[in-house]
Image (cartoon, rainbow, N blue to C red; front, side, top):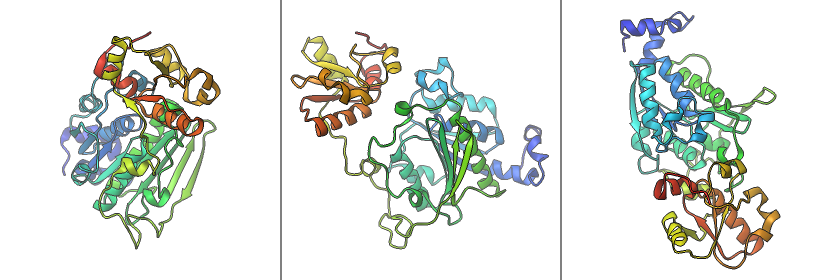
Length: 375
């Protein structure tokens, strides 16, 4: 695919690189790359792939921009809060490089649509922070024979690898099964150093470019580990697992499965729950109940539905503050942490009166009131 005069000027620093040149830049222009997630990892991925001149970039994200995203997702601004991530990202990326074609997928990637979406791209880069999507992307890429560029971050550490490339290992060779729910905190729970996703996302973009152009040696068969606090790195070799259920000789997965159920690993989050609409009705009718915030203090100070705060990590030290009689509603940002907290309290301490707020504060903002209610 030939470059225009304007593109020749724009990519001059690429064209002057030894062993790069015009032919390699034209490979970038002809390529189609899908980025799953326009968040911490996805935004630097998108920015650098756009700047590099990848011809077609697909963006998958169904979330909206939250003020807590701005600490690390530098593509977005304060005025973007509340808007759709995929839409805003593409608007800004088009300004960055008008020669790139963007395809917006403002939806949740699921087993029902993943094969159709991923099938139209050459390379997939995963910028999400949840296990169901990672296993879904991996399995779809294996079934479609597409390379998968993996990145993950947690607190001060990051990982990068390339899966399913030139008959190399895939994600299930490294992680055959997901951790139990609650074993690995997400960024909302454990925090993340703001610059870290920029570092790891840029590394992912580098791997995408190497795959597309055929230059250099990719991280296929290797897992790169980075610790930002002491600036150490480590590279671990990954080998194919003969018991891999999707690519081993006796594979048992031949189509996409229910990844939400799979990643709960038999430990479901089935707890008694209440919708935000029903909770509003309870409050308006002056029904007697206890409402406890299980988020972190900084989240609580930013806005709350109740003055009572007991972070998940402190629940067992404050059982005396959690009534065993009457309805007790626990809530967090999205309803996940509070559901896990209820499971723990029921299993270990015999509670029978706990109720989870479905969707947490996010659902309250969206369904009940755009303004945070403070009691």
